Amino acid sequence: MKFYLLRNLVAALATLLMVGWGAAAFSQGAPHRRPQAAPHAEPAANNSPRGEAARGEPARSEPRLAKRLPGDVTTEHVLTLSDRTVHFKATAGFIPLFDAESGAEQAEIAYIAYVRSDVDPATRPVTFVFNGGPGAASAYLQLGAVGPWRLPLEQATPSSPPDVVPNTDTWLDFTDLVFVDPVGTGYSRFITTNDSTRRHFWSVDGDAEVLAVMVRKWIEKAGRQLSPKFLLGESYGGFRLPKIAGELQGSQGVGVSGLVLVSPVLDFGWAGDGRHSPMAYVTRLPSMAATALEEKGKFSRDALRENPELTGIDGYVAESGEARWTLETAKDLGLPLPTIQAAFDVRLASQKGDVTFATKLLAAMRNKFGGHQLNKTGE
Image 1 (cartoon, rainbow, N blue to C red):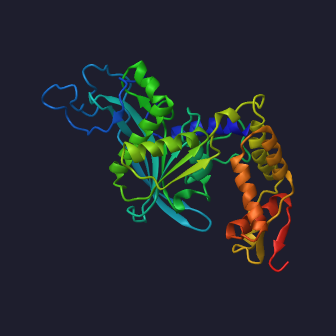
Image 2 (image 1 turned 60 degrees about the horizontal axis):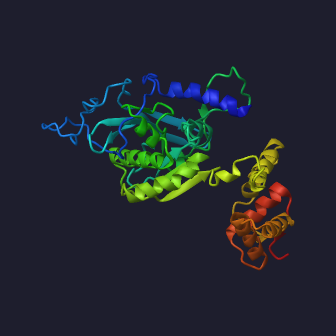
């Protein structure tokens, strides 16, 4: 129920956020060539097919279709939270993509960027945010997780207005944010017509190529070449991030400092109903358990709130047997479980004296969430 409310309310609010842009429908694509940057300049005097198309004027061989998005719009904001105030600029804009050979414009990639106005941009990190689908716009992460405002769903009903509230957990404290909508989502659209181009843009590899070009062009446009650059992706967004990073560091010459994967789809074989692989059930169990704890009001941050330095905790991570049994069963069935094995190895190492702050935190959280044994220093 909450998902469908979020989907409908996010769609309504996205319209409000992009006021003045209009809702021109996207059209189909252009000739299949890797998209490249082309300057907003008049075409060369000769009529070479490799000449660069004027901004807003497609190549002669390409028919003009949907209305173009208007120019970027930037507004200034002050976000007042209970313990701090954040000054930032919000920009609704787009990045044009051009055919590498003809210079014809292929698509316009819409984005919403939030940039702190009181911090040196040369050293300030910038994070590019992608949702999943792969047919989902970035509004879900923007209004449900890391943006400056969030859409509250605690008392939401089907007729609730899309009223946002300041987001105490916004990531603007430590990074600027660029929310990117791939072609066919949000306000992004194709400009030229060609079925092969549309298929390429919506293919796995083409998706990564196009978004890598968009990211590189935004960096150049904003002058953020020196900023540490991160990618954040949810669901299919987590699957596409490594491919985008590879394109950025390969064909685009842009270094990536890190990837943040939120509930990523990394193995589509586990996304089924479990009839062919029991791992679908195994991998969902932690999320189901965390959801149940949150609904019962037991999911909290008390372990860190009460003792931020975890003083007096010796870092011994206790086990109750489920992980050991799971690994033994998986071994008998010939199923590789590298993630569970790695987590179990950390527990075993802590029990043999390999204690770090991470094992202290893990022990404290397991105690709060699941009631597992928590040893104190000297015990």
